[in-house]
Length: 482
Image (cartoon, rainbow, N blue to C red; front, side, top):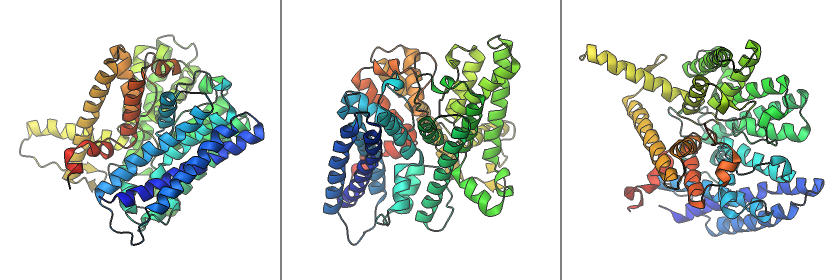
């Protein structure tokens, strides 16, 4: 382990977090919402701290970075930036430190959980900061760092893999920094396109920019208490459905499609299943809403079903209706979609579609082997045979996912939270959706939790964002042995 290398990377990340605060500080100064100092003071302090740490820990020879260094940089980087991101909420007087850290972690991990009951009463610059935390966290702070900072020549490939934690990672280019840049360009293009489309759909500029950032990051923070229902616009909903669907897909597909044509994209098995889930989910939820008389019009039922299916599958959790008051079948389907999540290589959470596909195929093979015990059944995805080590990884991930969900439920329940709400909150944070059935997702629910429960849920947000193993490896004794 090399403390200087870890400290050098953390210094750069902290300084970047401070520099980002200058944008809402400038906006606050222009609109005179009274929060300029709440951004300016922590921005200068963190910029200075990050710069000093970076300069004191520079490593001229850029020695080899071990796997332990990489895991420490990733996990401590997220914790550090979440801590820095909480400062404007505290300095403005909007939140106490515990709530501020919870809000910041929910932003950077794109979970979207919040203790803010009425966004309309919050200073616009603070709302912009919430959206910025989700936008930065969506692509991954470490990936952005690798893309724009040549000084991190060391361990770039390892940082990229640890951050994205994709089930079957593939490089787009031979140089990892070029790959990260491509992802950042795709992310920026989707953001710009979403903002322009929302403006054309009738949203005001401030709302359009904020919702574009939280759509592409699949984070779900809104400037309105009623979320997207406040706009009551079919055009806005359709733009957001398109934005969430595109952001829940693997960003690498856009680059491959641009280079090789749509044929290279449309044949992707994970993409086909992902779109199939959206189509089938919309139909099933829509029919269920209409059949149980929750909606009088089939068209309106399908409209709400489409929006909530896409929103919860991608983990964005925007809302156009109180889906917690829908019929039990619709609720169950939407909870299932949250657990599945979007595609690998996207900004969404959950298990990821590719894992769901391979777990289902593995289960089918086990049933087949009961009838044909001598059969050799390689696991395939399209024309590719999945290596056995990946099969083991998928199964291991699923076990740890279930175990983490159970542990989170018990830890929150130990605070006196009813078991249904305890499960829902652990489920919402581990899948980085921020919402679930019952009171979970209501800012009042998170606000009234004890401080220790908020820290536990913040930890589970980090677990979900970094896909479990990147964080859990730090808790093993072997990691700290020399």
